[in-house]
Length: 262
Picture 1 (tube, helix red, strand yellow):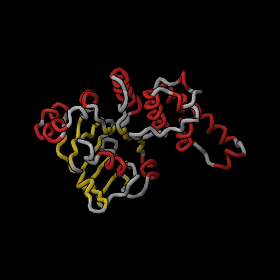
Picture 2 (spheres, rainbow, N blue to C red; picture 1 turned 45 degrees about the horizontal axis):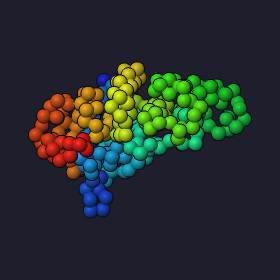
Picture 3 (tube, helix red, strand yellow; picture 1 turned 120 degrees about the horizontal axis):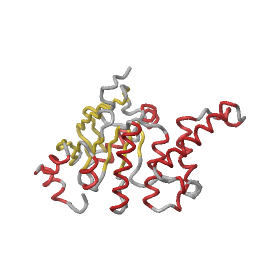
Picture 4 (spheres, helix red, strand yellow; picture 1 turned 90 degrees about the horizontal axis):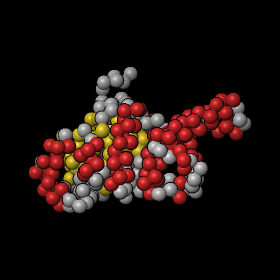
């Protein structure tokens, strides 16, 4: 049984090689329950590769990933989802023709659905499950301030609302750890501040642990309690936001080489 005070996610010596390219080398991470951590670095530093490894999209060349006490490295996205990991993507992956509500209901089926035959034959258990799914989906939309758009096609939403819908969909599966891949990309300052407040509120309401990759350094510094810096696939440093921001190695390797991109 997992100790409630133990780290939810423990990553050790995680490496990924693509042919002759070492994308990630000996990456380490320990995430405590309820922690909000940022992963930053220049373009090409390996941040998305780390996310793809943690969520099971990629299998590591070597190393260990333990989530909730389970070893999930190389076992695919299903193992990560079953262990309590949910994620969003840098490029929005909604079903644009489906309604906002149905996009979230589709994710709820993974968590609350009862299978094909009970659903087809409208058995009592399936009807109860569908009611629970609908209630869960509406709750997620309310949390992300999207209830008024529930019946609209997802593809018709403004970009910022599509970002929030993707988070609502990730939440619908009831994750313990939420991986957010550039959630503020394309958002204006007002939308970014709303996103910061929403992530904090979600953490407090559901006890979520959050790891985010983000180029908006203002958001990272205001939101995260700890920041890791990845450069050329290697962990350069980690610590409180103010300490990382003042680290001259970070300034040289990241902020100084692309402050506008940061």
